[in-house]
Length: 76
Image: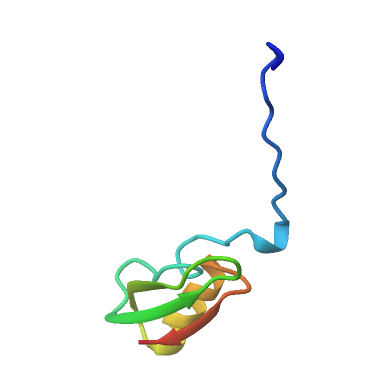
């Protein structure tokens, strides 16, 4: 082995990056919310259960899709 440092290279596609912010990936401050449980199926990763608060089920799904673009989302 050489004494030079090893560089790890990976590719991050802009379309795979999540979009975060108030009203985009989480409810706005002071909004009336309920707890929702969602199953997230990211491509190339194991499914996960995400528990979040949102105004309604549609908003909860939208928040999940903004955090994990390209992932399948269903209500648990």
